[in-house]
Structures are given as structure tokens and as C-alpha cells.
Length: 322
Ligand SMILES: Nc1ncnc2c1ncn2[C@@H]1O[C@H](COP(=O)(O)OP(=O)(O)OP(=O)(O)O)[C@@H](O)[C@H]1O
Image 1 (cartoon, rainbow, N blue to C red):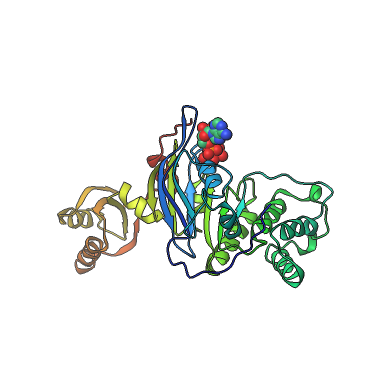
Image 2: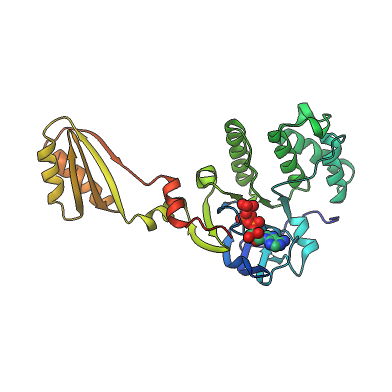
């Protein structure tokens, strides 16, 4: 078991880094030349369908698996060459974990606190903090067999946090949670990032992570297909924006004005609603609005119709399962 606790360092590079990471199992390229870096205090969403390679990359980062080639670093330390020091710096939450039915929450957390070498007041202080932070205090003495899925996830997160690591690697922590528990998880993740923790979190579902992540990476069949903010990925896929304008009267005249702008196309009118496509960016949209206002068109509604996040995900991935 791990016997190192974290000592803060002056390291200023990315807290998580994968560099041309590859892992094959027989003929399966589970992770195929994946590279990305996550700066301190940010949340990176690792998103992909079943069998995409998320767990394998996370297990390599967390020192539980060796790569076929390439590098994985936590706070500049190699997960391959320096696993003991890496383990002291990260908390890993696996997508499934063994429970011990008769063990209660506090005993479970205490076991891991001792395994990380926490002693005396520091161990008590960390146990108290984790129990309070995860909201498990009312269940502290409850045997694990009686915990709901959401509570077990909190306990698993508590275990990952017990030694106060600067990096968290969370493999599908939202799987199986009800909507309220998902929202609570989102708050927990954001507050950990606000404290300066760096978080890699995986999911099958882009919408599940979009609001809590600073950046996302979409992976399929071991290959990283897109990285960036959700907005950046959306803009790459959708260089034109679809706009809807609803007017109080004289939609035909408004449509005529919109059509005259050189950056618009596909202008269509149904009753009082005009839909059109326009080059991305603020400037053309400002011009259109000004054009309509100057012509004294009574605009009741002006809204971009962006692709939904599901559409973005479906456009990037092809639905391949390996
Ligand atoms: N130990 C192993 N032996 C053989 N193949 C493996 C092993 N671990 C993973 N794989 C294969 O590697 C590929 C990637 O699996 P991985 O578990 O990393 O994907 P994932 O994105 O986490 O999927 P899921 O969302 O379903 O958990 C899959 O084809 C899987 O069957």
C-alpha cells in the first residue's frame, strides 16, 4: 500500500500530462497515441463511448497499468518510473470498487488514512474533513452494505481525498447517480477545483460533464478526436451559426434585409419567424441587429440555435465500439 503523503512543491507545469500514450491488448489499441495536458486547478472531462480507452488511460496515470509506449505524468513525475511518489500526489476513484459489508464508513476511510501513513492529529483532522466534505457524517457508523449508490460514490471520493492529493482521477463518478446526486457531485467537483485541485473526470455523456469541466477531450477507439472547451469544439464543428429572429410584423421585409447582408445565407421565413445561417463571430450578428433596428423592424426575439451537446458528441464520434 501507499506510504507517501503529499508535500507541496514549486512545480509550475501541467499537473496531469499524457504524452503520445499507447496501450495495446493483443490486437486492440485501447489507447492510441493520446496526448493532453491539464493545468493546475482545472477540470478536464474525458469523454467517450464504451471501450473508448478512458479507464485504461486513467489506470496508467494512476500507476495501475503500464503503457505499451508513451508517457504519463502527475505533477511532472512519471507514473511509470516514479509510481510511489505519484501515488502520494493523486487520488484515484475507480469506476467500481469493492465494499466490505460489515465495515462502516469511518472505519473504511481510516483504513486508507493509515495506509497513506497519516498519523495522530493529522489523521483525525483529515478524517473529519473528508466526512464533512462528502456529507457522510450522518452515515459515519453505518455499515457499507446499507449505503445507496450515491453514498457509496461519496465514500469512494472520500477515500480518494483522504491524503489531500493535488490531483484527482475520477473514473465515471456520476454513473448511476440520480439527478440530485449529479448536481451535488458537480458542486463538489467545482469546489475542489476552486481549492486548486486538478481533476480528470470521465463519462460517456458530454452533457453530464460540460458544465463542470474547463476543457474536454473526446476519445473513441483509443484515439483523441477533439480537445478544447465545449464552445471551441462546437465552433469547429459548426463554423456558421443558425439564428432565429421573431418579429412583430412584416417578416418578409425583415427577411429581405437579412438576405442583403453578405455573410448570411439560407434565409427562410415561416409566419413571423425568420431563420438564417451566418458566419460565426459577434461582428456579423451585431450588424444584423443594427440593420433591423435602423429599419425600425420590431424584433421580439433573437436567438442562436446551437447544436445540442448530444449533436456535438455524435458528430465527433462515429459510434465505433471495440
Ligand atoms: N486487461 C485488458 N485485457 C484486454 N483488453 C482490455 C483490457 N482492458 C481494457 N481492454 C480493452 O481495451 C479497450 C478500452 O477499454 P477501456 O476500459 O479503457 O474503455 P473505457 O472507455 O473505459 O470503456 P467503458 O466506458 O465501457 O468503461 C476495450 O476494447 C477493452 O475491451
